[in-house]
Length: 81
Image 1 (cartoon, rainbow, N blue to C red):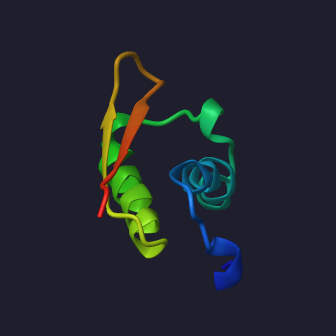
Image 2: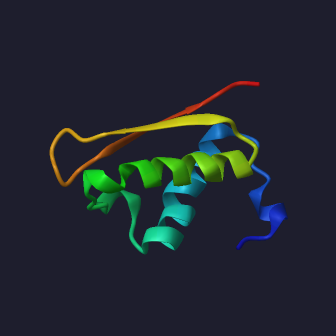
Image 3: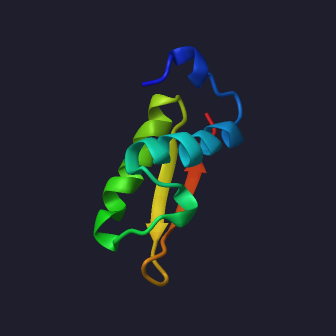
């Protein structure tokens, strides 16, 4: 848990950096760029990212694709109000 004041993101880039650096490490105990996952868990991870963005005040659509295991790619689209 982080104090609400530290989560006052103004820019989309700031919130995405938070997801990649802080949230991902807190949940998975590893850096995002070295993630090793199985395609069975992609729905959970997309929901986690979308939910975190929603909590931070950003409506988003998160999708994932697997081109070659064990790597996966997440696409985050933040909807403008």
